[in-house]
Amino acid sequence: YGRGGGTNHHPGNKRYRKTVEDNKNKYYLCKRLEKPLVALEIIKKWRTEQDPPGRFLKCDEATGLWSDVGDKKAREKTSQALRERAPSVRKAQQLQQQQVIQQKNIDTEASDPLPRLAATDRYFDDDSHPLDPNAIAESVTPISVYGSRSGSRSRHTNAADEQ
Image 1 (cartoon, helix red, strand yellow):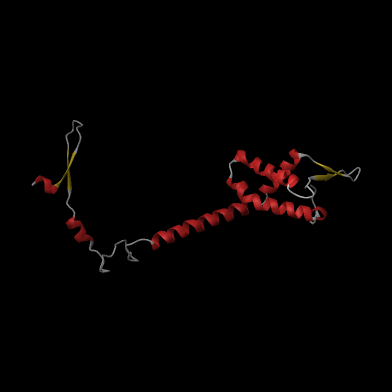
Image 2 (image 1 turned 90 degrees about the horizontal axis):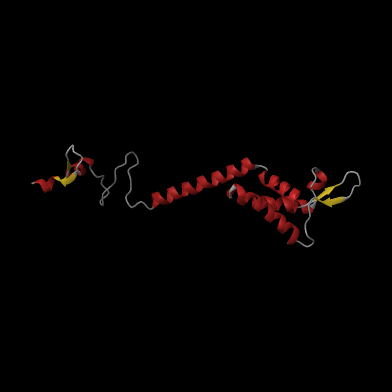
């Protein structure tokens, strides 16, 4: 429970810090009301799933004796430990998310059946010749919209239908 070199180098404290470190991503990904539950889960495992069971101790300066601080103080200390170095954990998560997005973009580009020209957004046709945008525009039949100002529904027709 204390600070300083003596408590930092104790094997139990090293295992505890490793356990906390292993749970930081889980802690940051959960909602605010779920965060204390992550700390309580660590405490429960610490106190029950070890032989001998782990404890959260504080030294009484007057007597020099060590005593358990209880679950409330243990949760406060565990929650604080989970929050330590938060910016570096968040930065690592953001970097990981960016890498996932970049990989998805690479996968999407690789699966695009129509290769693109580097300098333009035009597609190639089957014979690897760029499609002429003017030829495409000429082949599209314009759509006419008829309607009245009285609010009646507009009728969409194709120019070929009018002949």
